[in-house]
Amino acid sequence: MVSKYLVLKGNECTVANGGKQGLEMILQNKYDLIIMDISMPEFSGRDIIDYLEKNQILREKNIVLFTASAISADEIDDMIKKGVKGALRKPVDLVEIDKTLARFQKQEKNYGF
Image (cartoon, rainbow, N blue to C red; front, side, top):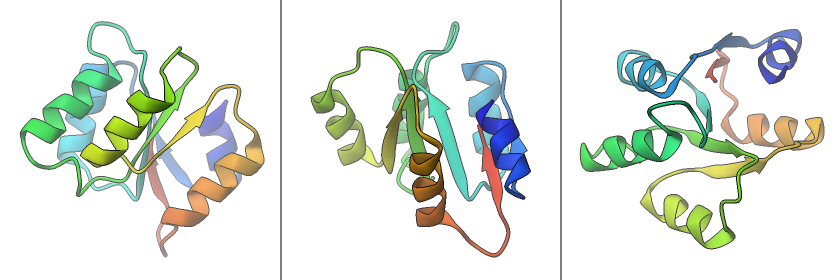
């Protein structure tokens, strides 16, 4: 639903169907913003963050966590210290999505989700 909302707002949006596919897409493409779920099958958002941090490329990516999981504020803060740019908690208000997009908006709007 979020990707449909982004497209309706005039954004280009690419969706991954799992963590491994998402990591490949992050490594192969330049996105203005990546909205990433923490809970993904087989290879989680945490696994992606750990990989990107280990390879010293996390800070150059605009990643915002998207989570309904019981992740604590301290865990989110730790990931932000590593280089994650923010977090959206499900269920998310469309106004919060708009505010997050505005922080990263450029001429071309290309988002990975």
